[in-house]
Image (cartoon, rainbow, N blue to C red; front, side):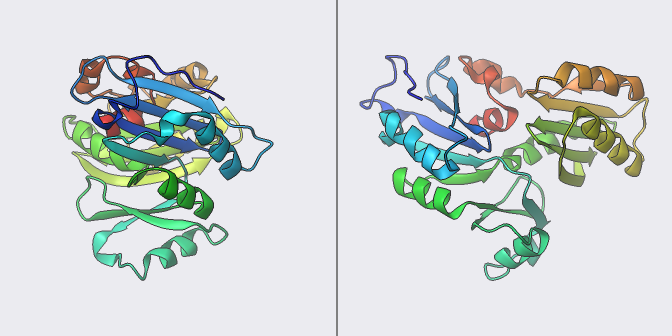
Length: 272
């Protein structure tokens, strides 16, 4: 799929821009923006050919769109996956990283990566398919790799600290959801669950709500994500919980303008 960029984006000025590529099982999306220029945020989604292996489809997309080869100020690669492990930093050493991941996800293999979310004494481990990692590392100039939850855990920590009530944050992706609970800015739990139908999502949210002894009348549920059943899910949640709200978008995002509000929350947060 060939993407046409506005004339304001050229190889001559690319070194002033930040490129962020978000990988997900259905394809990828990306943003390009100049941090010094308002209204410069560009966001696009690309569907990959599902009949082709993901790495091969990614390569084809890369070679079809020459702007990916431009030298950027920074390049971010965001891996969207429910397979990760959050651990106390004191437990994580280079020789134990792969062991922790393989213990939790025995059948999964790939290149193990480490992030430091803005959570006290927390390290997030995840992996990227080896072929994808090698291709991205070879094709982009010094890309920085992030798990999609890394920017969000810090954002939600900051947002929850401003609320007297306990807060649950839910991010709905195609095929899985992330659930994180905070109280007074402290992370109580974070986990991801795969689902087959919308009723599964309702079950997971209400089950964790009960397990964490959250208050149906007073505590807060913030939901984000894009699926076709999103509106009906919100209505069903409001039957059981009093305070169901769309996720809070950082106010700084509105100052950047452009397409930024079209982007998923993790990409928005990383851009800030």
